[in-house]
Length: 81
Image (cartoon, rainbow, N blue to C red; front, side, top):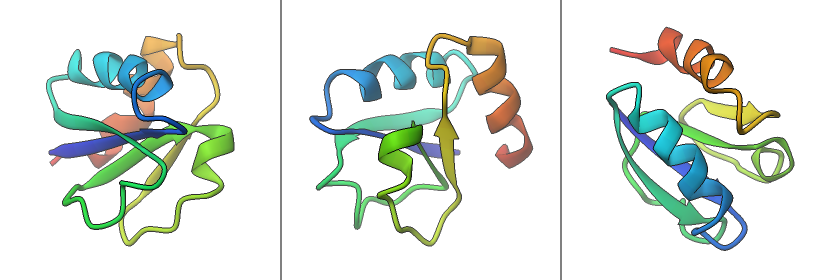
């Protein structure tokens, strides 16, 4: 499974979220809001504010608490292949 994490600049919130997601044993990449389009992925995860701005053909997870590892894991597990 490949997950793209998105934030405004691509190296703050998205990296923190990606580190949490990689603990669940999925592949991923952290990108900025302008770069997610065209990136192959199965799922996109972002903070709730950024997620509102994402239009994609794959599910977009809106994460409200970036420090809640268990909550993020529970959000992603239903999408695992």
